[in-house]
Length: 499
Length: 113
Image (cartoon, rainbow over all chains, first blue to last red; front, side, top):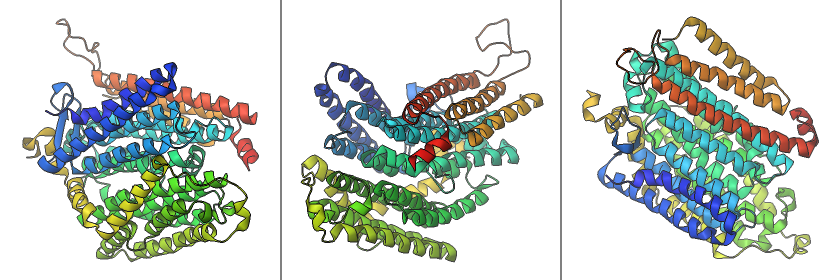
């Protein structure tokens, strides 16, 4: 048995632990730990992904205790999509943060690695209580990243983030405890199997509690209040990780709960999916609508994230293979686009010395490369061909049309028009001729560590936009695995358990 | 087996905490409300494993009935996590107080604007 699955969790956690000690000695020896840890996590994640692609789902039994007695890591084609996002996002952030003045510090490295370990655990685990523990660890590491600037504002933002996620965590644990009380197990597959023993009311209460919990954590409207506040306080570099990666991991947990544990046999399943569809539509309108009024570029991008949770929900709540594929595709694309937007926006605000859009007249003269990347990513996020954002939005629209959800398609189009408005507003300011902006001497950071990740992301946006089959080849099996509850159960408990 | 009285207590304590989190304006009171919520939850976890007349789950030939040890392990983990979350929340409340001179969340919003 290959130990790569558990190493994806252990390596970043051990790295976080070690760096707290190397910081005590000297900040200069930090790369000695940070570089092997980052590469190690990438390598372990890659070997897990390759193994699943070649040989199918993996079951890793911790301490060789077979399920349902021991805790297991269960990795199928859905988990590897999100594991890829976690690993790529964390590695890119390590490179990008190295080039930024504040986030290069040791405390940021420790919190980033903690978050990375917790997220890897959350996407791999096959145990519901472990999911709770990893989700709480994500909350705590995320709070640290939000509050680390130590100004009053970031303390309040961190507090808000912690409280929302903390209350969501208790909701989730309440749901877990209800299910345990009726079934006597925490193993996801065994829970799914014994769900029929749970009385319908308990089932519905537990389902709603768990979905609400991850609804708060993914910032769906009307549970999104903490999010723009937290992203603005975290700063662009870190907000990219929180929006691009952490939000996707919470989304993964939501999908696993809906499709893996409850599934179609649950009484409230169809109702929950239709509520999620409506929440998705509301999120698109509210998120884009509020983004229109923001002057702080980080808040604008944060509200755009709220809207894009909506787009992803329109896909994944559809329930058909095509719809879920489209939703997962948009989740992946949103990771690439939003990280590129946050980081190029971060670069521009440090050139100008202010994150406010109203002061960014003519920033394109001083930071042509950053504005170029921002332009490509904005094209993608609005949904203009030939970018990946267009491909996934198109697939979502097609899947909605197949289900005759005309209202949802209209909402999608209105949302696109709204997002076009605020991205154009920013870009027209950025490229205009503004002599007064030439007084400062700051220019964009052209070192490889700052530019490399951005160029890579822009390239991914264009390549996946031209050849969407590259991504959908991975995502279609993922969607099928997500919808196939029996495959999920038989991966954890063995094929005999399904009969 | 869960006694009906326990169920009522659990739900009441949990809802009192939730009401507090949603309505309190002072940061410290919000922290207290969160820990009240968590207390309700931990009570629920412990009561899940309760078996009438059973002993601690340590193997001993004199006893035949043991309580379920898993919820106790869950309760312990939940307590540790709750303590960590509360410690960080209180630290942030102190930082906010030092910066704004108040822990009233509305007052803080007004000063930010």
